[in-house]
Length: 313
Image (cartoon, rainbow, N blue to C red; front, side, top):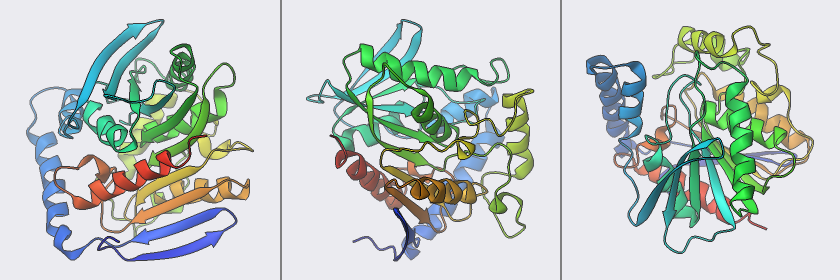
């Protein structure tokens, strides 16, 4: 049992859990947020370089081997611990509002969940907007999932943060054959409604310490170009599959994206799937990256890995 308090609510297959921030972590959370702010305000370089610098602060887990991949039209990184099974893998899809992020910078974050789950993780590099607008990113995510089948992976778990969480859900809906069987999905604060229609997005009572509405609106416009924001490949909220593998969503209570997570979880549960929604009070967007500083981040990844580990066929 953690220091967090929990409440549970069930609706069909949905289990919603609310977790309080332990009092002794409140100052640490503020320190983490201040550090993120300083990094972006003081960084000399491009916004993409700053984002990669921030993401690279998640330490690479001990005992992990890394391998760069550039073949068959797929680029990215494997992170593996010795003894990881060859027929199971995590496909880790990184965030960054479709405009930022790289597989190399995300090796630490992916390794933290891969080691906990006892399987290898592959992080693909997908084309970024505005140079490569929608649908380049979801097409690349589906291609990476199919590529895993060619590499001998028969079962995959899909994991992603923010835009990567949406890509995971889009890949789930669009992969088809040939691709590995998807055993489970874990999404950290997924951005799954580019129409920006969630109540938490527009509410003056939402005090997101990371995002302002205009920032996400600008990113959505750059990514979509002229595409429909309710196209299910861009906004999986509007194309929830009839059959889903077990799904875990973790999201912060103060996020603009809170109701993206709530609405997808409810819709997925209505389809009859196993859905778990964990809402973390007092923690920021994708706080799980802060494994060095926040005990809550480590606990959240422990629970995500246990969820993955318990759902292989």
